[in-house]
Length: 115
Figure 1 (cartoon, helix red, strand yellow):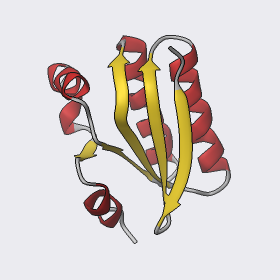
Figure 2 (cartoon, helix red, strand yellow):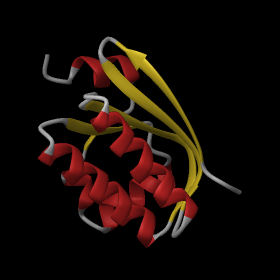
Figure 3 (spheres, rainbow, N blue to C red):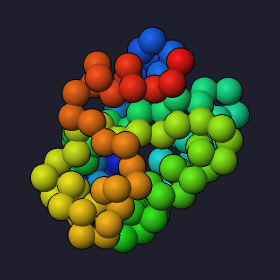
Figure 4 (cartoon, rainbow, N blue to C red):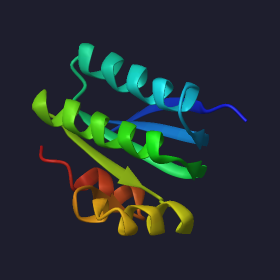
């Protein structure tokens, strides 16, 4: 199953709705390209909605970290939204749960970005 990304804007925050699997190859490249495109357009408030992501492998985790670092280095913010139980457990096991700003509520996630 391939990864799908749809983009929408809410109050100056760009939300990437991801669905499918974030794995070595297509899924991780999809995220990298989407994040780079947004930064190139000057959009630095990025929220990754992972509600429909059913699987992430180690390469996918690496891609999330890479996206986070890329956005941070560009002076932006990247946050995660709607983690599934599986993905949440994975981030806790890898100690990345403390690195990312994670929300379960879209409205509060959007308002948490610095204005």
